[in-house]
Image (cartoon, rainbow, N blue to C red):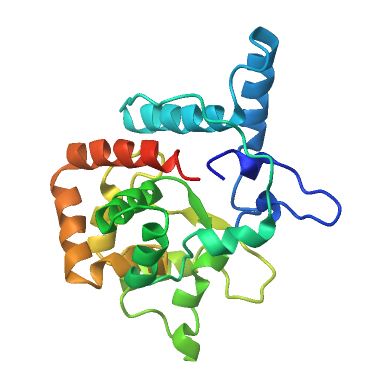
Amino acid sequence: GCDASVLLDSTPGNPAEKDSPTNNPSLNGFDVIDEAKSTLESQCPQVVSCADIVAFAARESVRIAGGFYYPVPAGRRDGLVSKESEVNQNLPMAFFNVKQLEDNFARKGFSLEDMVTLSGAHTIGDSHCSAFSNRLYNFKNTTNASDPSMDQTYVSDLKSKCPAPGSGQDPTVSLDPVTPRTLDNQYYVNVKSHRGLLSSDQALMNRADTARMVLANINSGSMWLHKFADAMVRMGKIE
């Protein structure tokens, strides 16, 4: 998706990345990129790729939501192939443990610290209840049990917003209930307080090395932002 292949539409016989259940309906904002591309094409045709627009849009989101600006290299060409089948092979899943997260990021050339740093992106945005409802209801197939690693006040709050599976409803909640529209290090405070929304979020406290990184990011939000910007630039270069 870093080559903008996630923007490509499905064709008969070839469902695209954007239509994978992992991306749809959680991934949105395609209209923003389309509008930016249309405007640029009217001013300077065939100069700025969609991949560059996605990278610039991510940088501007960081600037607006976090007050932090970082330079982004340009010149990446757009991908021409998009396959739904490749999504789950490459994206980290909401139920991953630390080892699975570590291996997933390592395959893309990222370190354990990079993984913890980029996980902080969950300080902004929303998640469908279906991504974590297993932590609220019938945890590990135990009737009415919730994940014991989750703050129980937080569990009660989430249950008031997320109906039990099978209701036919799948609303969204903020990944970070404290500062949901600000890019900051509150995510790590939440995780330390057993208020990580996804299993993969809370998993960072289950291993000593990643737990230390969580605490370091709590102690210095500025340090985390600099690391985050560096990791974002490198992520934009993933093949």
